Image (cartoon, rainbow, N blue to C red; front, side, top):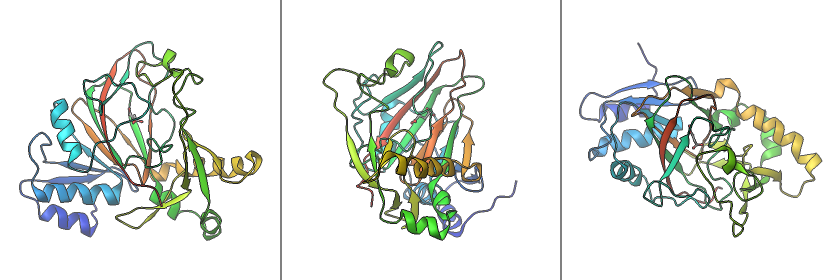
Length: 295
Ligand code: SIN
């Protein structure tokens, strides 16, 4: 099937040894790369291709990988220091790994609303590498949305309005004793009495440090208000931005198989885990990469 590639991606592919094929996942976001074995030391040109695809297309998919925990960790660490999540209860034998598990009977899944990971942190992770261990026969897809595309599609008037605005982000909806998530979910977060809310202020529009492109940066799971505004003022604007950020033309939907990998750039996309695996288990392993203060 013919594919449309941008120049940077074509150049990066042409520098690669071996037989590499790439396929766009949708018009706005996502590239699947075939021909790289992530369990082996990567050629510099493969690394460059993955970086190029990630920064421009926000999420890179791979198929048919076999990754031990150590290999998964080593691959992730090629892109930066590993991020230690403050709220997930470690369960996978390494403090950095998060086992994202949905078991029969669970009512909730990790990340079931549109979000950027861990945006409540002062320095949210730059990306995540999610590996599929055990996948249901149907269901359990993940959707991704380009926040470059979401920003670009706003009117000039809305862009001017958002310029300089900051949003308050918190983990009060995703962790702690009050949300009671652990009763409905196999993947546990901290809910002990010593847990304390983390709040951060981030620009509503952030600039990607590598591409310099602007991306919308508010989401339903961590944004709780706009700075210096009453709820009645900020809520309608946030509701508009949440709906806009997830318009179908900015998205792609990834159908997992065991051994699939999704590597997303958390600075320019949002994602959502679709909670429809019914009575089948779904087991994923995730490492995150440390990021910078959004500007
Ligand atoms: C997440 O990182 O939000 C989980 C995504 C997924 O399990 O598909």
